[in-house]
Image 1 (cartoon, one colour):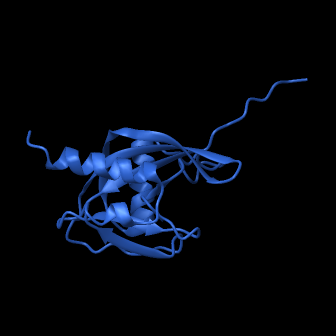
Image 2 (cartoon, rainbow, N blue to C red):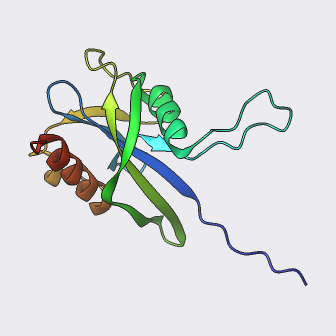
Length: 149
């Protein structure tokens, strides 16, 4: 019998802040706010859909697809890698990047993948229904972008 190791789903997420200092969040089917992002794509067998070149490229593609925003992903957020169990028995490795929004004047557009889109200040985030791991990543990124260089 051949051993097949269990595989962990990995989701790359981004903390993207608009020109007014508000973080972009999306509401999912579980009625939770979440960071934009998703899984890396392996590409199609026939090559018509290329694979993502990196986690950062996957995140940039996902945010563009989900919101219309163009971003540059990186760096990894300190404390932004964590394990989430969205439903019992299903665990996902979350990898969170800070993002630079390249289109800060553009309003984000809701895609078919989510129920609602929102922009929230750092002060509003603690009161939102969302996993604590996302809240920690958002707080860390706000601290990073607000700290003097």
